[in-house]
Image (cartoon, rainbow, N blue to C red; front, side, top):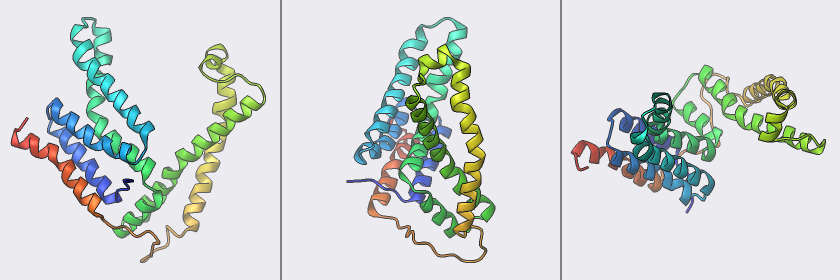
Length: 231
């Protein structure tokens, strides 16, 4: 079974994650929330991102409850505390953000924003930004392949040995190409008629399924438990 949530469901999950954050819930509520949000990655066979999130979150928990209580050095305590506690509380929202970027097409978001009558000055930049970073990432991979083809050393070791040359071969081409990419994506968005006033149709049919409704109820469970004082 592949999970593909409606964009409105993802926005609901984002709201739930922020409510849990504002309630300053216990660690048990936080863990339950993270588990609920992580499960769709494994069910959708997005194992890479699922395991990455599990490992990062587990390391944060281990640092917060095992390492931090035994540290007396203030210079080391504050940065570790920021990563293990402050950043950890943002994990539920970050999970939803990753899911929105990885498993939800930009056309679905644009269709939703059109349906909700969002202004064009929001929709057009959103369409450009949503496609900008994946395009830049692809350009980065092409640059790395070109460096390998020419026999130029790459990777962390190359950066340590020749940082100036690494920046020259990677950063400068990316910066030069970034403006052109942004311009091309803007033209592409305008060509598709995103800025045309009036009512528009869409080939994307947004529909809430039973999976959306069931998982919306499941995602609300941590808040019910926290407010009810069950944990």
